[in-house]
Length: 265
Image 1 (spheres, rainbow, N blue to C red):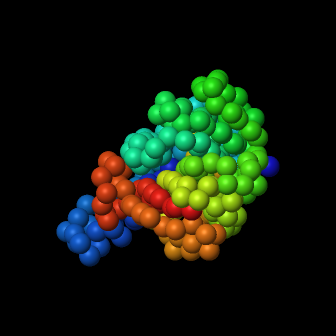
Image 2: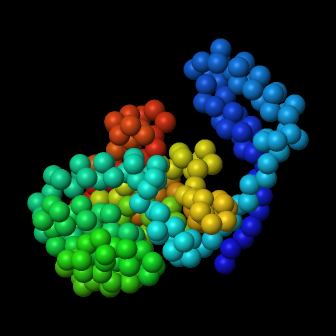
């Protein structure tokens, strides 16, 4: 089911300017005046093109939204550009075995793991994503399913990957519980997620439909870092490492874009 709305370009730009001012209100007060002047300019021209342009906004449920996105999901995609190098570096330190790429999407991580010598099982809920994944990594095994009920035996894998998915789940506890169930003792789960701070700033997974020009959003739920960690620990997973990453990929406490968790069974 899709829901529709419209967004005026001027309102979007004013929101961005406001966020920029909030970020510097204490650390760099001198930078506020130019931003305030830009907001005043936007207000004066709010009813003139291009600021008066209305952008169609469409909200799809996760499965149909990602089915639409599948042909172009791999890029250009800023989230992938931030997440993939972090994931690759994390998994490079692990000895290859049997890996489960949960919510595998187009098979990006499946391909990386396979190239590193892992035997990979990919699981995703959408046919469109699985079709691309099977084409990309023909040697891997793929199943249709969800992270809340993985079609994999207990204690059967050495590594679980769950990346860029938790924001689309209202309750993350079953995700970590399933990871704990399918991991062998000593197995590891890696989860690289867009940082909760991004959502607090108004960020949400979206793409522009190439046929209609509409901006399409998928549902997103706000979670805290504590919520992730506590759900993982309760499920029987032990936190080994937590990092926050900037867009450049360097670990930093300043304006993080990505959160990575390393958990051991």
